[in-house]
Length: 89
Image 1 (cartoon, rainbow, N blue to C red):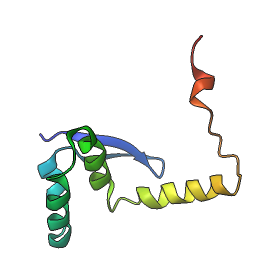
Image 2 (cartoon, one colour):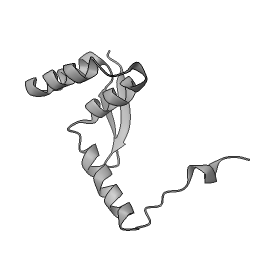
Image 3 (cartoon, rainbow, N blue to C red):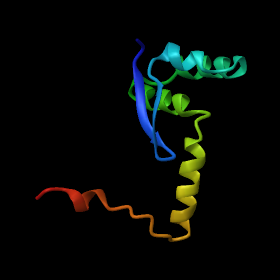
Image 4 (cartoon, rainbow, N blue to C red):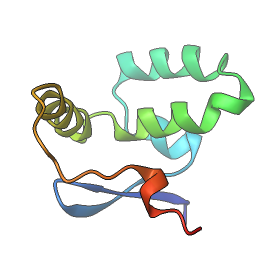
């Protein structure tokens, strides 16, 4: 079984493809060419982030993030906390 990535989108746990081959297999022909060009040149330190971005493509996660950032830009309290506030002293 191929590896998977797990995340929450729209309040639901979602499993995404977790290998280069599995991510590539989800893409249409035009996107495969773009994926191949990009992934071949991504620095190793940035590969994980690039693969996650490609795995999330088409899931609606971008729209969910955009809506959240719009709420933040309006100054709306979204219940976020500062990561430093939760550190144990």
